[in-house]
Length: 320
Ligand code: SF4
Image (cartoon, rainbow, N blue to C red; front, side, top):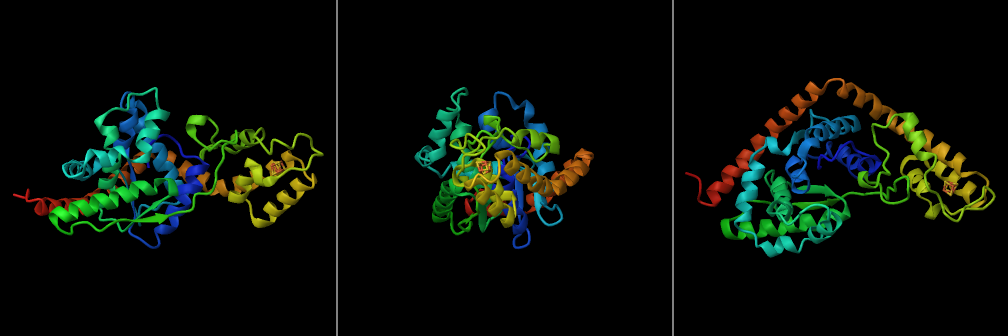
């Protein structure tokens, strides 16, 4: 995960809620990718340090467990960079140019010069992040699946030249429920429409109150359609079935007003966030402990990554 700042509800339902249970089934490596942050934010890296800490607080608060999983910072494990370099010898530039997000992001972020070598190589660095642990599976949403496909192609080409060093990582498709922001567009920090895991209850209430609803429901007496209402998407993610049914029925019959509907949603959401608030506050009071957790995680990751690099160097005949 890139350290772009505190995490919001979209990160919770799209990533963390999937990652936490994986800890019961796999040896997990969760990495805060600061080098990836530099691929787009190289001109102003001043926030990266602070953002790493914000991400780590949210991870720990959401239930990632440093006793079971390695939680670490990418640049603390230099083997990622070495493997990226070695893979870059083998992979044609055209493979990277055709990654869908390459052109897309260049167009979306026109205020920055993304004609850099690092930005082009971003998916290859991501491949190194994955295969340096010989990962069997990578939990991603559908939009990230092409990147994992590229990783598999890279592995096949590498193994073709140097023998079977890497397993092909599988895509572990994880559900990413639609998570609209308060303006109805996709929840995103850059749209300024996000509800953050660290937002206190009064801020959550204040953000949800004016949230856009079914645009056709203008008056309290107009029946609405929950299927086109962003508030109802949040009900689907955070409310129990009984409250979802209450909201859908009340909406369609104009039996409830939008403020009633948002009020019930807010209660359920705050109930869900209460455990996160408590754990986050504990960690945020002890940043040194969190840096220690990340360093310890890097140590565990490095042991695995170093063994892989050893094997890679031998396979490439550069182990002396
Ligand atoms: S009642 Fe609820 S679901 Fe219906 S339009 Fe209002 S906020 Fe949306």
